[in-house]
Amino acid sequence: MEENKVSEGARASAPESSSTEEIRVTDRRRISLENNASGDLAGGTGDSSSAHAPSLKPTYVEQLEARTLAAEQKLMEVQSRFEQLRAQLQRETDETRQRLNRAADERARHEKADFIAALLPVADNLQRAIEAAEKGGSLESMLDGVRGTASSFENALEAAGVEPIESVGAPFDPESHEAVDTVGVEPERDGIVTAEYSRGYKIGERLLRPARVQVGRATRAVTSGK
Image (cartoon, rainbow, N blue to C red; front, side, top):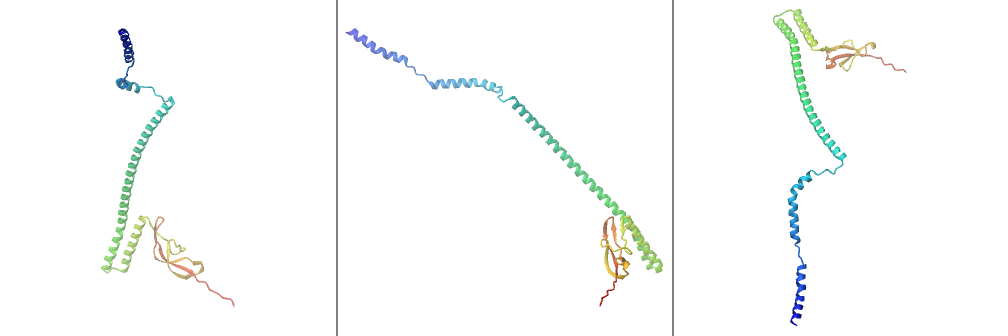
């Protein structure tokens, strides 16, 4: 009976020990941490290998990108060159404008000086006429002085490019004549300048002042029938 009890106790305890040996607990957290650690250790070489990984882009796409990049660089070079040329052209234009302005100012000063120099004989003749009148000179001598003064003045105007406007005997021209009054004339002289009160002048095609004139107007008899 004792043996049976022992054997039964042994059999009762045997399943418990075998079940204890078959149940194995695996710590998944530790395995995951180990895998991550091993992955991090291998990551140093993995990055370098991925840097040299072959491109997945088609060849024509790479060629197109390379051409686009080259075109952009060429465009930047052309734009930079254009900006340089524009700045250079602006400097040259400014220098040319300044040079022309200086030349124009210098020419104007020379022309002004020449005109004043041409007027000096006029002043000399006026001074002589005054001196002759003060010394009691004859009327003829004073007239000669005045005529010389007028002649000198006309020469100075001509040297400056100023031309007198023809008036007396010419048809009335409203562009160059100013009618002060009219006078009755024969029909064939209608619209003809008969007298000049002050001479007009022009320089080139520019009118300096119109001539103040008298214009002839033909008188027409008015008859009435009965």
